[in-house]
Image (cartoon, one colour):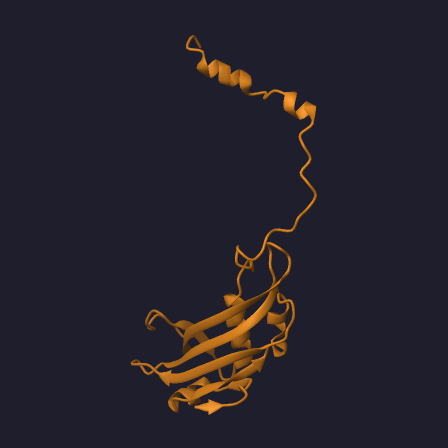
Length: 175
């Protein structure tokens, strides 16, 4: 197991041949696309990547990511700290190669001759793991107090429904 900083680019096939494991931390500030929906980019991502080969000799990567992010609660509009955990199993295939032969449960990761951008993979995985609507627990937060709802005016109360005539016709058995 290699501990320390996660390298930005790796050759997944060579690491799979050695059954290598990379573990380390990344600064959230390094992940620019991930920082956009967040309140701030302070914190670290704890990442682990286990490379290996499956029964079909396909290069596979098992990733585990953990991070705490700060977002804006959409109920009370205050910051909320959310723990994000993501696990994914990737099958590494050549660009343009068929992935029909792969067992179910793998996400396909097409890699050409260039090294795999591991930071982009981490960023994509965490973006998919973010909640669509970040919220505090319901016991903790309440919606912001806004102006009181105006009471209906007399015109709205006394105005009749234009379809009430149809309701009367529907009840009349002679029609």
